[in-house]
Image (cartoon, rainbow, N blue to C red):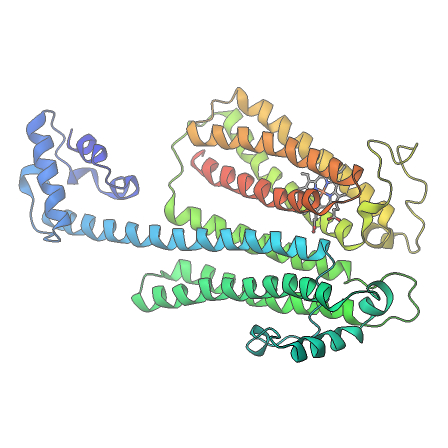
Length: 417
Ligand code: HEM
């Protein structure tokens, strides 16, 4: 059949599917096939004229040519957004290492342009170090820090901020070019504007978070650290930005494979939404663990010392404060959420095994199950080994991988309806 012939020649399926049935000549045999190939050449030569031999109408050929062009443009924009997603994953990793190496408060001011120039001469370094010495982190935690050590933590924070700026360039410059070229449709425009807004908000939030760690709180007995609420907001926005961008990219450059419509498949589809939401909220609760250094209390598993429920869970008043500010309760909640999320994913995987998932979605479901086991194992090891940087950073990045797989599966299962 001509249609089969065209498919074999790798014409984007999304374009073929949109063509009216009348555009094809539905006859068997090699002659129709050859005619279809000629027709394909006509389209690619940009002639867009008649192609009667294959049974195409002139208007259909022109429409098909323009649909192929649009499909190419969508693919290019999809790859652009996927590239930005990769950069966001890099920023999450660098941000995690910056926090874990206690480097995040080494730059004490923020300028979009001026902040790009690091100190170069000995004099400039000493000036920057003197500024840092006025802030609580130096005075209470890093009192014996040398200039060489300061340069190291400064570099970490500098890298994180410059990486953020690079994401800005990688997002906004192509967005502008695509807008000028007229590639961004009205539907896509609102998403790109939303993503751009989120990116700018994330930059401001980063500075708002750092500021909370620079304030002197003479009454506080705690070590100087950024507000856990702001840290959670910063990580949460990064995850939201990544998720929205990844889902948009998939919509632009990947057509979900057709699947049957059975009750089991519909159930797995519904559960895929649940998995994504659970992974997101578990990651957010992890940010509170990180923000309060709650990974350093109760370094035993599965019990909390010799108890299943620690007795200082509700030590703070009012009670709700414990959920966000009491390290014991915050760790307890994250552990329980993490284990529930893992169990939920493995349960969905078991159900999906008998549901007959098609190719890519089966692969994603298996990957998600394996990753959930790895993520929980990384979490437990991070706890048992008193939060070493490589384990904690891998655990943090693992949450992004898990979220990405869950979103991808969700997108793939859109075809079940
Ligand atoms: C689906 C499961 C899980 C997800 C998605 C997840 C995600 C996260 C995230 C995003 C963080 C914040 C990291 C940061 O900002 O640096 C975190 C921290 C942490 N998580 Fe999990 N987690 C999961 C399960 C677990 C489990 C089961 C445990 C242990 C029983 C655990 C222990 C920890 C610890 C100790 C930290 C603090 C590490 C630090 O201070 O950097 N997690 N988690």
